[in-house]
Amino acid sequence: MLPLPIKRLLVETARGVGRLPGIARLSSPLRGNPVIVGYHRVLPRDQWQEYPCIHADLAVTPALFSEHMAYWAANATPISMDDVAQGNLPRQAVAVGFDDFYADVALHALPILEKYNIPAVLYLCTDFVEGTPFLWWYGIDAAVNSGEKHLDLHFAGEHFTGPLRTPSQRLSMFRRLNAFCFKQSEEQQRLFIECLGTTRHCYQREALPTWEMVGKLAAHPLVTIGAHTLNHGALGTLSEHECQRQMQQSRLLIEEKLGKPVRHLAYPFGGHNAAWNREYALAAELGFATAVTTERGTNSSSTSQHALFRSVVLQEHGLSMLDSLNTGWDNALRNARKCISGRAHA
Image (tube, rainbow, N blue to C red; front, top):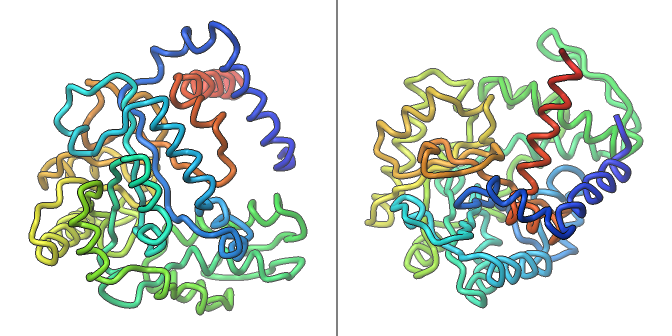
């Protein structure tokens, strides 16, 4: 595996090629319409630095978020997810959303959205507001950033061992622990985090909104509230009954609290291992107008409204990433990687 700095340099170089004369014109058919981008948290830099591994990426600073919104306002046509559902979109349409709906969205993102007049959908996990949510991925994050040089853990017949000295090693271990925990029941997830010794990091109550905050944002003309299930479980790992309950009950509760319909859904985690054809069909049956994944690809009029492609934006993503999405070059690179990978495994 390449060191992270080298990997990022190669990615930035590849994206830079998309800015050469004529390249954007060639890749424009792959842009699709709309481009959908997703964020998680917007945190001042001092708070952002408290998350030194994966969640430093999942949060962006207000300065970067403002830079991104300025780009979209100048180079695309920002639209709402209601517009996406209606179709007949303007050229170069872009839709902005936030998963998990952390309180800092109201504090740090909304003023920037207002400045550039950009609509946004906030996808809400109702258990995050209702009770004491157990955000197990924060426990894993804390475990790999504990300062220990090595992890050696036995759990449920699995042996997790490896160095934690470098950012690349910590990220690799995070992904391994995350992939395991992702597939476990809620009870097993709690036991696993207890074995890691980082349970306290899983309770982020101060970072999450209240119903009062949700209600205020729901009344804002730029804001749409969407559903993100009850507790952010990976739907693809659940029974069909539980999957349906997670989607339906979260929507019904939000509608009860806000007194308005909830038409949009974001699948938690959102990749093909968390949401696939069964989940897409359930979202349609339950009457959601749109549902978004975290799979990157080209949206078009033929794309299912319940399997919309979306790009998650991280702190490491500068304007070259946005420009690559906006010109279709990102999808061209992704397709090239698939071809190369396919040949490599042929």
